[in-house]
Structures are given as structure tokens and as C-alpha cells.
Length: 123
Image 1 (cartoon, rainbow, N blue to C red):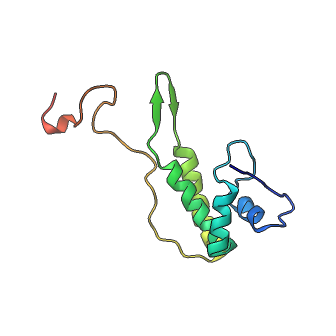
Image 2: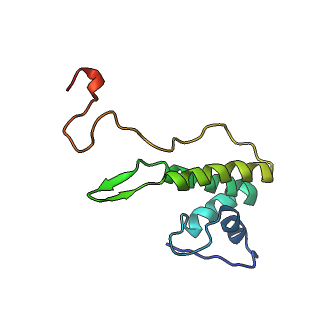
Image 3: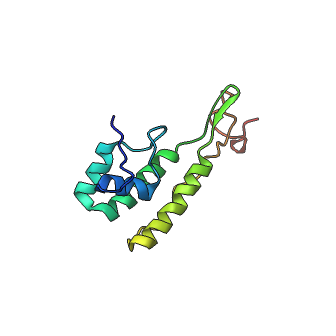
């Protein structure tokens, strides 16, 4: 698991990291190898878009709650969805209009044994 960022932007990897805002080792989203794959197969500009799309898939997981602690990815997801639109326009790359859902609403209480919602005739 490798992370590098060269602030002089002298490498393609550093350029991609700069564009996607993944520039600090603490809490980075993508490993060097993942970015390298995209750069090798698509070039820098398309790699930027592909990396943002990958980050969006990771942030599209349902929110988690364990006891009093919860993890919400909604604001980070919204930020990367906005960044995707901005970078696609800036780099002249067309992306589909498909956008990942920012949250998942369960039709039942997750702290119960119910597997379907009350709309199915259950109390």
C-alpha cells in the first residue's frame, strides 16, 4: 500500500492526485498502483475522471451505525460528485449522467428483526 505525492507535479501520478484532491497520506482514497493503472491505460485526463468515479463508488456505501457512533459519507460523496462534473468540463471529457445515490433508506428499522417494511402488512 503505497502513497506518494510530489508537490512539484512532476509526475503523472502527482498530477492526478492534485486534480482529485487526494494529496495527503493520512486518509488517502487511492493507492499509487491504482492511479498508475488508470494513467497507463487511459492517460492523465481520463485517469482523473476514472479515479473520481472510483472514489464515488467507495463513498456510495450505506451509512454505518454502531452503538453511539455513526459514519456518514453523504457530504464527501456530494463533494466528489460535484468535482466529477467540474473536472469533466475542465478536461473536456464526457461522462454519463448517472450519479450514485447519496444515501440508502431502509424500509424497516435496522435494529429489529424485520426484513420488510410495514407497508407489507407487518406491524
